[in-house]
Length: 166
Image 1 (cartoon, rainbow, N blue to C red):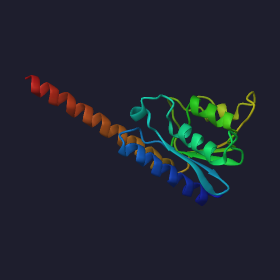
Image 2: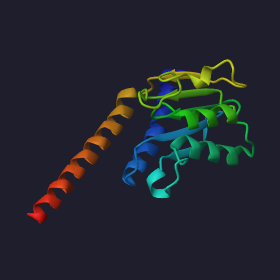
Image 3: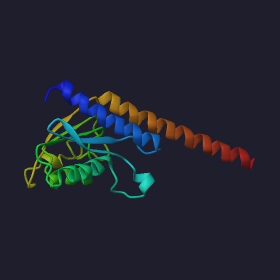
Image 4: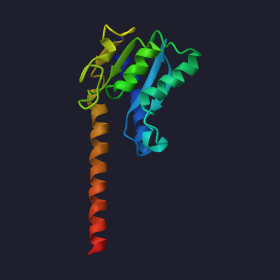
């Protein structure tokens, strides 16, 4: 797969991340591609669902499973706007996804090369090819802007409460 095609699919994952952001969710998106077609899409809905497992990758994998009518996602690629966590890496391995492409590393929770590389661990029953850095800046900017705005709103709220008490 050439860079242009990888960027095409990552742009679809970014659309999902923006859908999460519109809901007030952390802007992370994912798509599962099979034979040049998106068969699964997902974005974070943890706050909306109040369910810790509703990460973008998990939702995209579940949709892809339904699309193929199979728990095995062989010959599939996952594109995600942030390095997968341990839970998502586990689901990637269990579903047999062959290739994972992501934007920036997650220094606090990434398990596709940062804190560990669960996806390439030879002790596991399955391994996945991993490539980092696809549209990295665009993906990182979504997260940076989101958290900057969240901090600004919290600070504003703090001062609004303080002013109302004075």
